[in-house]
Image 1 (cartoon, helix red, strand yellow):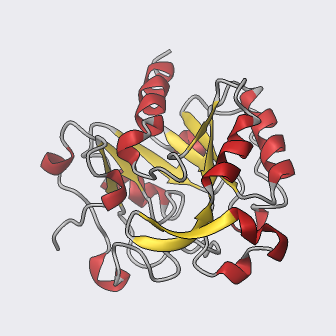
Image 2: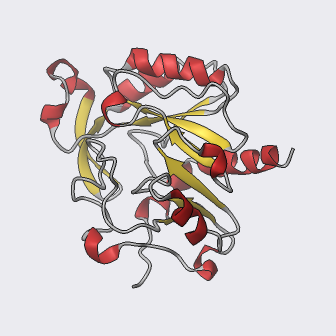
Length: 239
């Protein structure tokens, strides 16, 4: 099976890896890996999708851009031992310190998106950053998550949701979204003006960043969050 590159990470110094077969068991709504629009479709034929050690040389491996690293955690860790530089992704707030490398935690996955978020009272050293899923109607939840984690000196990345079905967007918020291409597919994604308005609320907080630059580019090439926080976390883990 030939490795398939994630077009979002092209030219960024990041390469992606998914060790597991099949779909992620979390079944988070609006995950593009769950709605049949992934660059790896058909998943039954293209997973696992693992770069060789040579392909990953000199790059940072993002483990599980389309699954959860706490799904078969021991298997995932073993499968990725060959990579010199890697970080894991999970939306499960468990066993984070069991990972042998930095880990990113999505704190408001699935049904929590608008309502609540996972709270890690004592973050482990290898917690690279927390990802907060963001839209125009979950402002209170986002603010609470940002306050909780940045007080603990944990970098917080706002990832703006995009929707393939505009009917899933509350009627009164549809004016904040526009149909546009993100990487390879069209989605109803946040308008730049609304994105800037939300981000402006955190401009005085040096620990808050956005995943990509909505309305301009979603490419990892022009972001840099993961590389910056990966190496900062590796340095912290040495202490």
